Image (cartoon, rainbow, N blue to C red):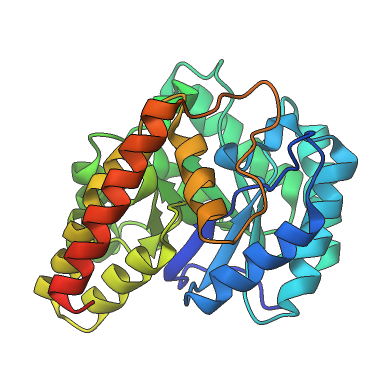
Length: 310
């Protein structure tokens, strides 16, 4: 499998981790999930992310899931693996392991103890040193990590750490950050790296308009993200927005802290992708009222999609 580069674009879907009702990894559902994402036209997959419940996995499970997914795609799709860890040693160990298995690159979020610009730069400089030649993604997700990384700091990292090839942009509000980074690369002040966006796709059309290359996030209908990104690539901005609008109410619902992942897994189970919507403990579940909300949104979404001929 070719390594991840600055030219990456498209939809690298953030995969869920399927569990049984008893909390064990559901390997058959892992296989179906990989096949489903590929059938829906994603460009690549990112596994063991925050919404993949990576912190709830043992190190052995993390490696086993990476191997299962990488073997399943058999080189057809690039796989990025989240390797965020409390220290550089476990991060480096997992990264080396998954790269040996055939991963295209890895993704790293900053530790919550990062408070200053210099600390953010120093951390990612050390990541570059620790990972050697492995290409990696800088995950910028301040709503979860509580770490804000200013554009000037990202530019400094891009200049000094050549193995940083992608930004997973999840700042909110953060459209101006994309504008600033693209202005810097357009002027030749920094390398142009790939920018793929998260937050469940909630701002995907606007992010594409600001110069993003696609999405790296999860949503229970990945075909929405594929449609938006492909329409933008063809210059059909109106169709991109029409596709997005049809799914927006459910995208919004998924963004609720605490139950968003449960909603995503509920719909994926309803679609036959995974056998159970269970989160590994500690994790919540949808109430009867939540399920009623989701079912209403799905019914309205189906009607809107039919009206638009999507």
